Every structure is written in C-alpha cells, then in structure tokens.
Amino acid sequence: MINLFHFAWLLGIALLAPVALPAGGAEKSPPQIRRRENFDPLLATSECFLRGAPCKTAPIITDLTVGTPLRILRFWNNSKGQSWMHVHVLSLDSKSGFSSCSQGWLDLDA
Image (cartoon, rainbow, N blue to C red; front, top):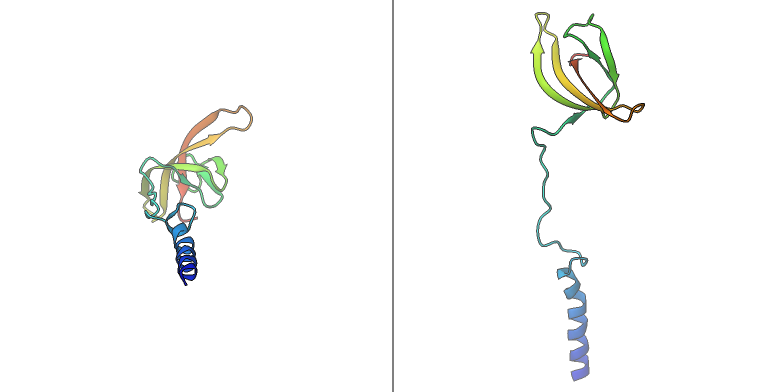
C-alpha cells in the first residue's frame, strides 16, 4: 500500500513538474509585442515607380521592387485629387556593394 502511494505521488510529480520548467510548456511571462517605431522603415508591398515630381508625366527615377525599404517624408494631394507620398529610399547597390540613397514621389492611386 505504501509502495502504491509512493508510486502515485512520484508519477504525479513527474507529470506536473515539467510544466514549470522553461522547456516544459507553460511560459511564465507573456511574449513581448514589438511595435513599429517612427524611425523604422516601411517596405514596399508592390512594384511601383519612384518619380521625380508628384505628377504622372514626371520622369521615373527608378522602379522599386517588393521589399524595398522606404521612409515616408510627407503626403501631398494635387488639385486633381491624386494622392502622392514623398519617400526616402535606402537600398543596397548590388554592383558596388554600397548603399545608395534617393528621394522621390510614389503615386498612391496607382
């Protein structure tokens, strides 16, 4: 009878003790939520053109691929109701290995 009690007690401890261990399952503190800071860059979600001025006929500086980091400088709406975003682009130049910086306008209505 005592052996059965010791075995049941040992089995209960063996089943419940790992829950409190770090690799055992339950986490004591909730995970930290990372919020975007103002200085964190945004990423382009679609391919688009970086233009020299907020106008559809303005020359294209470069075409941006998905995942290009962007920093928003300002928003602007023209008299025709088109929305534009002035951005600062920081991307790695594959030829030289150095980063190149450029600024331009993105058409938000496209």
